[in-house]
Structures are given as C-alpha cells and as structure tokens.
Length: 392
Ligand code: NDP
Ligand code: MG
Image (cartoon, rainbow, N blue to C red; front, side):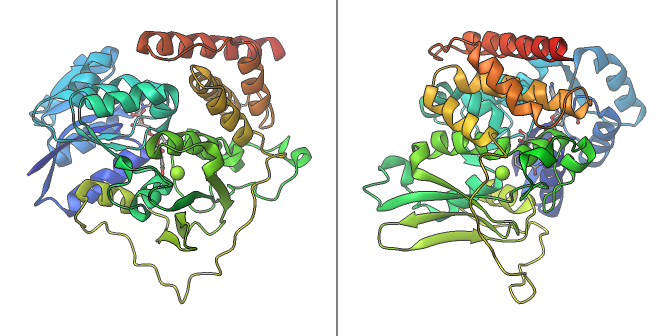
C-alpha cells in the first residue's frame, strides 16, 4: 500500500487526485488531507477516505475535530502552517501531492522535499518563487519530483528517461514545445479585453480548474509561470522553449529532437491522466479518463501566442531572466492582482499593469534564502495592494 498526503485536497487537483486514488484503492491509501475554506467538503472527504490526518487553519481546528468525531471519523486534526508541514513530512507518507494554490504552498511543499518524498507537483507557484533553492533541495534530500501540471507531465513523458543526468545537447534535444490553449479570450484585441468580467475569465474552454489558475490561463500568466516552471524542472533556458497555442488542448506539449523527430503526448484534457501517470510512474494505472478518439477529435491547430494583447507571458520571461527574487515578486503581484480582478476591484487589463509596476518598484536580490523569499513575497503582496488601493 502506498500512502498519500494531499495538500489542497478540497481543490480541483485535489478532487481529481482523490478520484484516481479511489479507482486504485488496492494500491493507494489517502493518509492525510488538507483544506482551507471548504471544510464541509473536507469533512465529506474524511468520511469517504478515512485519512489519519487532516490539516485545517488554526481558527477552525477545534470545531473541525468535533465535526469529525460527530461523524464517527478517527481522523486527527493538525492545525495551521505547522499542520501542513507535518502532513508533508510525516514518515508514514510516501507520496505528497502539492495541490495548494499560490505562495501558500511553498513552505509545505518544501517540507515534503526536505523529507525526501515523491512529490507530485501541481503548485507551480512554489517552484516559480523559489527556483534554484527548490531544485537544490530536491537534489540534496533525494526527493523525487514529478510534474502533474499537464504540459510538464507531457514533456516529462516525451524526454529520455535519464534526461536529468545529461545536457539537452548530449541528448539531441532542440527545444521544448509548451502548448497553451490560449484561454477564453484567444484572438481578442487589447481594447476588447478591458471590459471582460470574472465570470467570462474563469470559463475556460477545455479545462475545469480553480478560479486563480483559470484567470492565469486567460491572461497567459499561467503560460508564463509554466515557462519558468519548465526552465527549473528540465534545466533549460527560455530560448529553448517555444510556446505554441493549440486551442483544442489534445496535445499537452512536445519535445523536438535534432533529427527532426517531434514527440508529443496526447489525450483528452483531464488532470486525472497526469496525476495517474505520476502516481504510478514508471508503471501505468487506470485514471477514469475516456480514451482519445482521433476519429471524432476536431482538427488540431497551432498558432503563435499574442504577446501584445497578453503581456503577462513576456513579463514572466523577463522575471526569469532577471533572476533572484524577481519571479517571486512577479508571482506575488499576480496573486494580488488576480484576486482584485475576481473581486471586481480592477479590470482584466490592469493585471499586467500592476505586476509591471510592482516589478519596476522592487529591487531584485539574490534568492538563496527561504526567509528572504517569504519576506519578499509579503512585501510585493503589500505593494501590489497599495498600488491597487491608490488607483481606485
Ligand atoms: P483550487 O482553488 O481548486 O484549490 C486550491 C486548494 O488550495 C484548495 O484545497 C484550497 O483549500 C487550498 N488553499 C487555498 N489557499 C490556501 C492557503 N492559504 N493555505 C492552505 N491551503 C490553501 O486550485 P486548483 O486545484 O485549480 O490548483 C491548485 C494548484 O495546482 C495551483 O497551483 C494550480 O496552478 C495548479 N494546477 C492546477 C490545474 C488544474 O487543472 N486545476 C492544472 C495544473 C496546475 P479550500 O478549497 O478548502 O479553500
Ligand atoms: Mg498547465
């Protein structure tokens, strides 16, 4: 039996993970789960999966423990940030699914890394923020880092199995082709984007996801974060990654080799595929995903991203190139701007403006210290909030 901790069990990736685990209950057991606001959902999860541990915010811990007991669950509650770190590092757990959204996932994900776990990484913001520090910790603690972000999982499947030990040149790899759906506003001009609503922005054409990543997909910041994520995961530079808009989301990304071969991973857009792949790797398990029917699939089309109407992709590329704390600052400003857009405090096209402003006002420092990264995250977060307040 393999024991799993799911950080962010109540979210979209968390629920997809639970579904895969339920289908393979002879091999996997949910040992620990976490929730944040949707604690009624977390209670249902505890009733169904009977985990040993559940992490909830400090303020909700006592009440949640009571609710568990009343429901006849033996699950023990652990509270706050310490509770999350305990879930991620507890010795009984072999696999940690990092599915908290945003910077809040960094410390618990790093706790899993430091405990040498197999980590299924969805929480791309954690890696974007801490880049080198994160990858160094993976190596130092011999953790196994497997991407479940669908594009990175696809690239991982198309790379040679020992890619991490050799350079791209040695392996004959020319470039990575990172696919993007283009989001709900693909083809729109900047002027038309000014008045889009949160409801329009979160209505992704192909994927069902949490609200923050859905807005990131609409601004193309998701692709920017993914570009940085790919640079760290696969040890490449942004010039070695081409972003390809592929609106059908059937190809999940590709690797282009020197001999002219392009390897792609295809499938229906369903997160259960990359989750199942990384859970069982190098084996394969059922994921509950419908097989891809090429006869009924529509034509597969490709186009360049519009970086003028959607400047976030370029902002992310620049932040990676600036290095140090710049990606953490970009990420913090984006989180605040996206939240403000969802609360209808700012317009859609203000999101890149605010990120740019925060970056312009923030000196970049070397990012070799977790405390510094966390304090820069808080500082950039406050600066973005201040800019939004002053503007409106
Ligand atoms: P959701 O918003 O659906 O879920 C987020 C999860 O994080 C929930 O369990 C939520 O708890 C928890 N959470 C939120 N804030 C905090 C906090 N401050 N402290 C602790 N826990 C918190 O997001 P998704 O599942 O869509 O995304 C999760 C991560 O996976 C993101 O980093 C995203 O970029 C990445 N990802 C998602 C994909 C998808 O298809 N959804 C695809 C690829 C990557 P609660 O709900 O109880 O409040
Ligand atoms: Mg993705």
